[in-house]
Image (cartoon, rainbow over all chains, first blue to last red):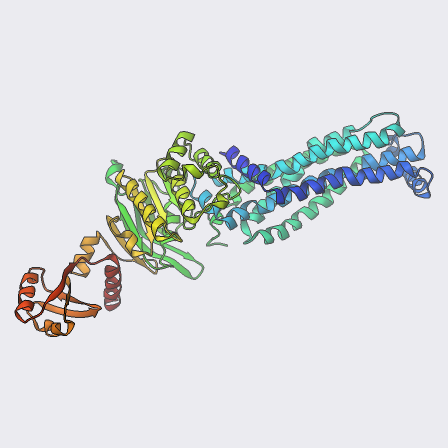
Length: 270
Length: 309
């Protein structure tokens, strides 16, 4: 039953090009175009004051952090720091943005189309609908994150790798970030967004309200990414563990928070 | 307990409010198994709320509801698996084809693809299943909605304004299809505010207004209860020659609606009436006993309710 909800939502999304093309552009921009431009500029303008300044900044970081930064020259170390640490938040921000956009529309969208009435009269439990919608919103964002991550790895290795002495990306911290930290962070945001999507009266309101959720999560993601500077593996592992616990708690309570009446667009207790 | 003896649906003193608005105010009715019950009433009478409470999609504030011997609030999943619903303005995933929509319905109702294909064929929408539903006409959407509602062979079918927005031809076709389902022994509850739709289909008519049952029964019983006196339409070559008709024995009332609607105390009077007209030089062109329509009944019931209430 859950699979049916996921499948129809994903298929519907796939057939709505107006919806997913901007999201693909967003992913391409943040994972490929902007990193390529920035890292490319860093490698082209090797002797510019900007590179020297970044190198100096890297040189002022605590010794524990400097140990994690590879490269023999200031320019190489600046490129490495830029690629591995400073761009890490995009790995969370992009999938989160995509999943939030899909999730915000998921339940209120059913109501606006009128298909919520059909679901309300169906034998699907509200839990199945909630979990189905959550995965149908999580998958596009996470898939974009994985594909983006692969493309980003390619860009980083091609541009920065030759300065470091070979392909070095992804690092252990990034692997943990992508496979351990990002899924629960998206799930946390979606667990909250789906509740909002069930409560608000229009898709426009849902998108507005979802920004209230995504903003704190984005800030948290920056904190996590900053933690990667100090202790990449441990900070990612701990952040991921905490995020998983929070996500599971929110998901369990989320399945109980949605009422069948809300699919109809009427609720006597609204 | 022999559940076949219990009504398919029963509402007992059901009340439902939305804030200050009372949608249902102590609704009582029962839909026998295998019958067609028509919930008749103006917009806002509480018909859609009744459907939503029947499947457990909504909770009543008060009262008891039983569907196939089950409580929709506690056994909602089972109730919904055994009931089919055609909501008002049936909605679909418009970007997907008719078949993709039906397949989704088949999955969640645990029906197989063959059942979905059969249902589509039964409602003559099988030729359009490859098209995206967004391009369907209102009639095609209604047919697809009916196919979607019956593909799992539900024991109870709830139809909420199934002909809304349809042209007369499509509307008649849909009503014919509903009659066909009724002929298969399924319990049907149909909500409508269009009185002619209930004609010839209903085993039971429930007139609802302001969330209450104003009157209920078989159409003929209701006709006998509210319009016991027979009416005959009479016309003549010279209408003026009929002016004395109200003075004749057995004539209770005369109303001019283009032709004269003459209310008699009994249908046995009709032959004598015709003889008397001819004796007095009238050349009748029309003598037609009429069976009251549901529309006549509806307004008569409303009038009676206003007078007593």
